[in-house]
Structures are given as C-alpha cells and as structure tokens.
Image 1 (cartoon, rainbow, N blue to C red):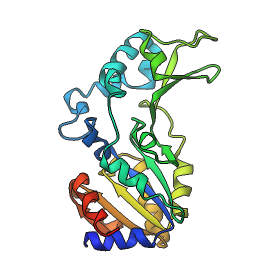
Image 2 (tube, rainbow, N blue to C red):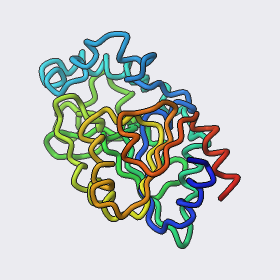
Image 3 (cartoon, one colour):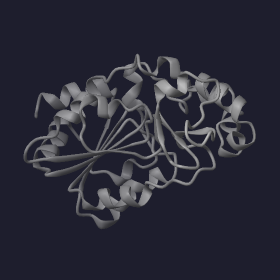
Image 4 (tube, rainbow, N blue to C red):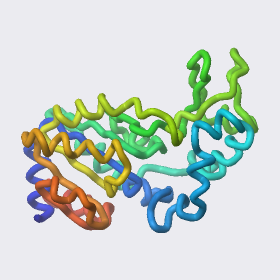
Amino acid sequence: MSYQTAAAQIERAGRIVVLTGAGVSTASGIPDFRSSEGLWTEDYSREYYMSNDYFQRHPEDFWKKYKDIFQLKLLQDYRPNKVHQFIHELETVDRQVSVITQNVDGLHQLAGSTSVLEYHGTLNQSFCQDCGRAYPLEDVMQAVVPVCRDCRTTLKPGVMLFGDLITAHDEAEKMVTDADLLLVMGTSLQVTPFSLLPYYAWEQGTAASILINNEPTDKDHLFDTVLHDDLSHAVQQLQKYL
C-alpha cells in the first residue's frame, strides 16, 4: 500500500479517529517507556513503584519516584512535533478529527487538537482523592508530597497507575465505531485494553483503516493500509498528496 492510497482514504473521510502511542511523542524528546530502549526496561520494579497499591502505602516515596520516572521537571519544556501538528491540521470545516491517545504528555492539546481522549490519563494534573479537586502540574512540583488545600489529602496523579481501572474505554469504543476512518499512529498495539480498539472497527467492517508505525505489529492484518515508516517522514509523505 502507498502513501497516495492512505491520503485518498483521509481525503474521503468525514469522521476520523486517530489512535496514538508513544511513537508520536518520541520526536519531541519524550522516551517510549516500553520500547526496547525505553525507561521501563531499565528496571522492571518501576511498574511496582508506579502502582496504585504502592501509592496508597508509601505516598512520599511514590511521589519522589513518580517525578523522577516521568521527568516532570522537563515536561513543560516539551513541544508538539510535526506529527502532532499534522493530526491537528487534519481538522477542517467538513472533517471531524478525534484523538484517542495512550500518551500522557498533553502535546495533542498543545498542538491545537480540539477533541482528545486521554486514555491513560495525564501528567499535567493531579486530583484530590476525597473532593476531586484538580491541581495543575505547577502545584505538584512545589511540594515533596502534594496535598489538597481543602482536605489535606495526598493528591493522586492524573495518569493511570498500574492497578487502576481504565475508565475511558467505553467512550473510546463508541468513538471508534462511529468513525468512517481509523488512523493508528506510533503504537505497537500491545497494551490492553487499548489494543482492542482496532478490532471494533475491523469487526463492523464499515470504516477504512490505516496503520502507520515504525515496525510491524501483530495487528497489521486488521488494517486496509499499513505503512512501516518513521512517523515524521510518513507525515511529510502524506502531506504531498493531501
């Protein structure tokens, strides 16, 4: 399949849902935590430390490790790259584009995308477990252990921890089944239940589908068009035909 074919599918679509993974943000300097060179592979115990169970039992040590692992001091230095911008620019008067992202960095919103479902939560906010009040990243960085000003309860990160329930899946499933094009970018589709989303489009058979990833996945057979390429190069090629 060619870039010209993929561009034609995009041109025909009125409702596009874009699924994005870590590959979309790596060009902004954010590491892929689960890749062969990612941070998770350096120490498998990080999954233990980044669990809801560890947070509840050892909040002070959790917050220290959380800030280190997710490099929160650097988060505001990251900027959207040409892939984020390409996804935003797909939005037109006649085309609705929704993003369902595994990424927790907020770069899709910073690039201007207007409909973003953060499937695994966000690093940019934390929440009081009692009253639900949201606190921005700036507040979190000012305290060793951030607490709610009203309840004095330890804040919980907005990112999903290991052991947390995924709350966005039903909404994501509906978005996928309502789309007439599913565009998947920068994810190997290994993490469940996110990896189930392409099956919904495939099973109903009414939506066109494109997968762009730098290496093959075991879900390639679910897609009409599969492109194995660096994402930055891929969007440059697509723009030639759009």
